[in-house]
Image 1 (spheres, each protein chain N blue to C red):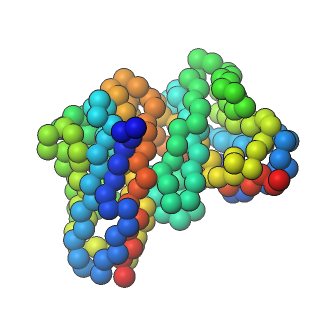
Image 2: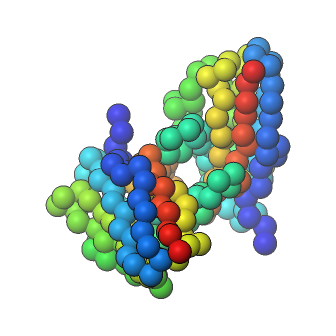
Length: 113
Length: 112
């Protein structure tokens, strides 16, 4: 079963450090999404790609957040100069173009100390 | 603004009984709705969906009902099983492939 995978599963970093997360979508899925989930909340949309094109990024939380999907396969989400408020679960999902169903990975739990 | 709301943070049900989870939305442009199930330390798992052209969709023990005029949907689980204990999220979208708007989740506990 080649579901959505994310790496690392957990990341602890000190405030001010940069972190990068990776997401590998289901292989035939051409859309890839990043969400953030904080305690007691549902996932909150950040950005998404169709193939290598980033179609929506206005919901990225600040200019410290950036995402790439250079070859239309895996994607990375980078947070620069992390702050304690960035501590959250970062979820990646993928889907087929034209389909509503999004399939989620296990998430990366970020803790900023 | 919270466009999708789940007003019950938690629900406890006896095994074998019906679990009813509710969800309300405000955006009349939403035309597709999903329920996701989430266990701790895992990502959400797709459970069941419904298009706005339907008012009911059933899959085994799970049934989702949509009332467009009330902007309300519900998930029924019958019979409830201990393995159903998880957090359930309602999500809505307006176009295929667009972002989903999620509710805050309802934590279901099925008591054996």
